[in-house]
Image 1 (cartoon, helix red, strand yellow):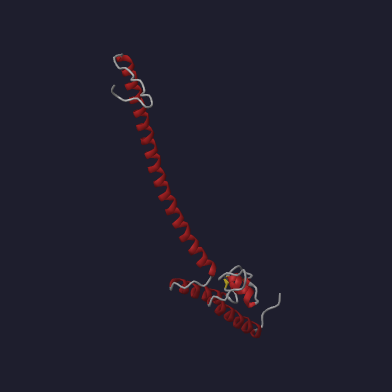
Image 2 (image 1 turned 90 degrees about the horizontal axis):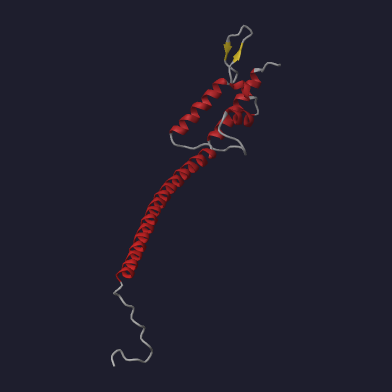
Length: 162
């Protein structure tokens, strides 16, 4: 693998900084996010340069653009802390979370209403059953007494008293 010349490294750093400014300003490519993968793709560099490397003896050394990755993450965190939303997906996620909370609240309200209506229905049915039982008891009582007579239905055109 060929080593980067200082000219190539400077050109890549300039491209990364320009891409970083565009991404942090909210100018994301289609399908991109505010992350290192999109930064590398937008700048036209490999993303492996953003991560630490290992020397042949196993000791770690910083990647050629690791300082830019750290700067990008720091600036992104500062924007988020200031309340700015760089990635439109973040605002969409926030909007959807609010919508979910609202829907959960509506469901809880509906559940309360449903419980109240179920309780009312149970009470109404028990009252109707009690009224029916009372009517049946009174009918049985009337039949048992025997001194109640059913009056004949008045005929049409007849006077109540002769």
